[in-house]
Amino acid sequence: RFKCDWSSDVCSSDLIHPLTFMYIKTFEDVRKFILEKTHISVFVDYGLSNLFGAVMVDPAFYVLEKENDKQEKSWFISLDQYTRTPNEKFKKDFCLEALDDNISNLPNKHNITLPQEKLKIIEGWPFIYWISDGFREKFKEQVLEDISDAKAGIQTGDNDRFSRFWWELDENTISENYTEDNKKWVSYSKGGPYSKWFGNLWLKLNWVKDGDEIRNHPGSVMRNEQYYFKNGITYSASGSKGVSFRVLPNNFVFDVGGSSIFSKSEKVSDSYLLGLMNSSLVTYIADCLNPTVNTQVGDLKRIPFVTPNDVLESSISSLSKNNVEIKKHLCSYRIIETNFEQSPLFAFQGASLKDRVLAYLNFENAQLTQVLINEAIINELIF
Image: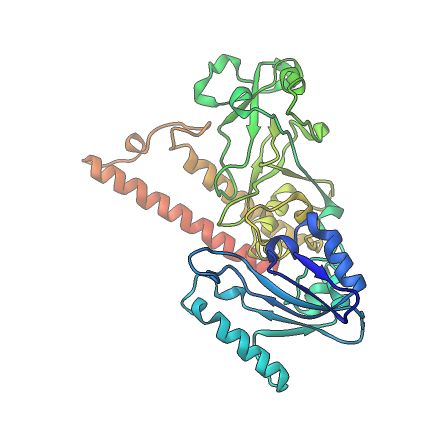
């Protein structure tokens, strides 16, 4: 909660929630007010903690000065890295040591100072205070929005009514190509659990008469219809593991929770873009822009983008395609997947059930290891 007594020289605060206040779009006006009208004297980013006993909270503390002296640097104390670690109980000690060292002009790894004007470089003015100046400058150059369209999709207003798993339906009512067959149920991307490269393609959506029933529902919102049924990249926006990206095939409608990205540059293929989005660099940047468990379309649009040369584009695209094919092939052994072909118990040889299960697990581990190797190479090439 923000408080300011304009008759005094400083503004102060009660506890605030830094994950919302410091980053998300809703509080952009608050950040702009602070950076334009005040000077951040000290800001303690305390991180998730049981500061008040049994209840876990995510506090920050700050002192703002009325006069915005652009020459004076702002001081941040970073303690959020100790959440859920053995050192979490020492946060208070680390904070007091950082305070003493700053007063004594001594170095301390928890103390970060920078002119608060630099916080304005990234669109939305998030309080990303810990990155280097060189990295921060990348946000002033080309960004993902320049070469692709990141779009949120449908909000049905009643998923229980309008969506089904594919195995609940008569296969004769499921569309293969809606523009040709106009069948009732079309494929529906709605996020789902953490899954890179391929998968989570189980849902179907009632699209009879071009989705008239959904359009007429009072709680529904139809967004970006011009992108429906186009191939692209979809992702799971929320989850403790972070954001994960995978192929969005043709003939799919997408949801808010399965928002999607569509390349608009001839120089950038979907395969390259998928490799980039699944890289550790983009995961880190997305977490910087929005460290909550729900990555937004607006966060993705701000990710810096460097156009690759032909060799890099080809190499990363090839590795990305290989990962998609591996994950797609593994899905063919799982009965809930739309491309299911046969059980691994019949596909793999062995004298006993145990031998066949072991043969499949060895195969699956080898394939997933190849995916991890490919991801490591992609990360190196992206950097």
